[in-house]
Image (cartoon, rainbow, N blue to C red):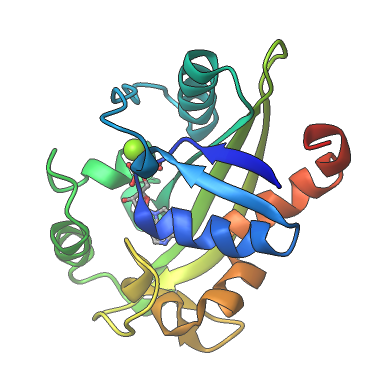
Length: 198
Ligand SMILES: O=c1nc[nH]c2c1ncn2[C@H]1C[C@H](O)[C@@H](COP(=O)(O)OP(=O)(O)OP(=O)(O)O)O1
Ligand SMILES: [Mg+2]
């Protein structure tokens, strides 16, 4: 069976990639399966920069195909914050709980119609000997006033998806994988699937 290494330590992302790749009969590995892989420093100005950085660092170290995901939340009323700093919004310990609390605090007093936001996902594909191929997917929504839902990870309990009338964290993994920023980025990679993974 073919295997792809996802250059992430985020369990929530890994579960979503496992569901995408199960359909294609491709096995997913991640940095969570490896012993103490070095942290890649995410100091790029864009999601794309960071995704390429992660994919190349892990791909070159292992000599195998790698996909890296750099993603986050852009809130219009906060001029696009937390953006590339989404994981460390409330501090370097990377707590989803603390990040969500900080987001609610920063948006205190902002009316529903001004709470528009989007999730962004850059996916970089590294194949040994080639330059990285990078795509971006987005998902539009609104930041709610309180958390709701038990699924997903990160900012999902605060992200309202208007088309579905539900919070992202109220969607099953299958439902999220139809409409998310990550799903939309994956769709852009599909065209290249056969060349990427044969
Ligand atoms: O579908 C999502 N649903 C909710 N929140 C999400 C999602 N996708 C990204 N996010 C948030 C989580 C984290 O605060 C940041 C990603 O940061 P990001 O650096 O890409 O990931 P990470 O540090 O958790 O793992 P890693 O770098 O090892 O892939 O955006
Ligand atoms: Mg990260």
